[in-house]
Image (cartoon, rainbow, N blue to C red; front, side, top):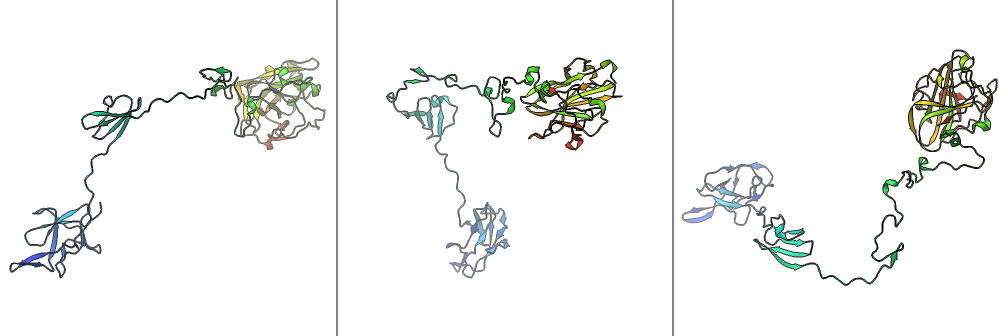
Amino acid sequence: MARQTFGDGIADFVVQPTDGLWGVAAGTTVTFWNSSTDGEQYTDLLDPDGTPVTAVTSDDYGALPSVQGPEGILGMWADAGGGRRAWLYAQSGGRGLPGDPGAHWYFGTGEPEDSDLTPVAGDLYVDTSNGNLYSYTGTEWLYQTGLRGPEGPAGTGNVESVNGKTGDIVLTATDVGAIPAASKGAAGGVPDLDPTGKVPAEQLPAPPAVPGIWLPSDYGLAGWAYDLHAASRTPGDMPGQAQRLYLIGVPLRTAKTVSQVAIHVMGYDQSASTTTNVRFGIYDASFALRASSAGDQKAQLPAVHNIGGQMVKLNLSTGVSLSAGLYYVAILVKVSATTATPYLAATNWGATSTTSGAVAVSTGGVHRWLQSSATNLTALPASGTLTAASFTEATTCYWAGIV
């Protein structure tokens, strides 16, 4: 609380009797106390310049100069040395005592006596169930009036029918073609929209079959590099001749949990083969390894000697959930010699392996075919170890699919 100012008022003078007559007392020292007798002296005072003082002196006319008292003090006893002290009020009054509490409005259901209230006289209560108003006298609640008016006449704007319903109409979600919110983006519901306002690819239905066109689903596949039988070569090519990592771009049009990939073996003399290690897997567009076979999988490659070869579906170590997008099927075959290695179907192949299929890059940054520069790989490189600089133009464009 701030300091209050004392003295320098119209009645603030020091007087004394002289020869039976009262007159002003000039140059008199005045101290201030907390009691009319004895008590403690206030010494925490400030003069008009803000200088600390412990007392004041009356001027030549006996007037008491202004002085600021201690913080929070609204009145002091002044002592001019005459044996009797006088009460001195501050120039500005302090805060008065709090007034009585004002009236409160209470709201509830039922009569006020049934409510847990602590009312004071003048408080009001409204029963919201019927609009009754009560006031509190200080000892009891008294009913005053009803705030709710009488019920008005029924309206004349009748609804004849809604969606084929008449009378007292109650509409359900089915009546207006609404579905539960949980059906958004779920099977049997309605598609959701992504942040761009489009339906996510994984919620789109599979492309319809075009007459005369073969689709991956016709072979039990979710996606493939191309229509195998429209462009395959015989006898194919040997992926193990240089121990390269071959990547085959495969579009996946709908989201799917994948546990197999597919290749097409054109010919394989299994009993005479020098193949020692076969690895398969799936990389995404950023060359992150999403799934791979569990170790060596050469036992999954069957002996193939027939015309046209055989499609082989190869197990991955675990199923992986893939969203719609573009992926790479990885093939890596290690051999101890080039004797009787598996020949795999490819879109182009020649004895010199100097030609290539189309290698344009998709808008998603995925190539149709890639082959590693390294020729001594024994396992699929882990995520984070492959970049675009790890590959060269593929001179052999294998076929692969995602099951």
